[in-house]
Image (cartoon, rainbow, N blue to C red):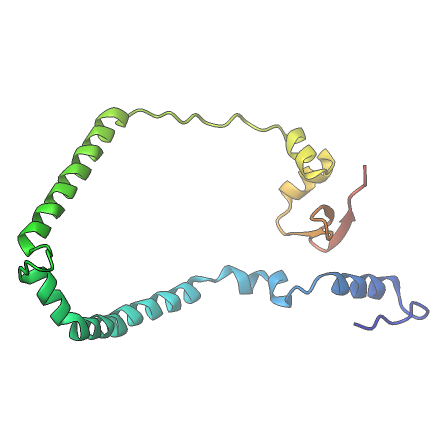
Length: 175
């Protein structure tokens, strides 16, 4: 990206050019109307998955049954002594034993842990601790919390360097 000379440019245009050079963020991210309405995207995605499941998965299943039906019939439904395969009755008994063992384990856990809450609520965090963790001053954090529209700018290291509250660009003091 070519940067123009700073001879005839205003301070705002230089700051804008430098900001554009740092991060390649699409313009629609800063427009809340584009980001907030996600219902149509999720609906379209759900319709696509339903169409996939309804149309294509039965075809895949039918194809697998068509090509492998003789193998399934020989090894599961018929009892071949040379293969020593499991019959359908043996498979059913194995499934019942597995189901009963899982039911027994779930009953044990339900009896042991029913109505016992081992989690405790986290302690309330002070505003000073939050300000320290983000490396900002307390009054700046209060402004950010009370702002209705807030844009945060980070440097390449992931540290918060400035913030924008409704058009007012504020720099953080490097302490």
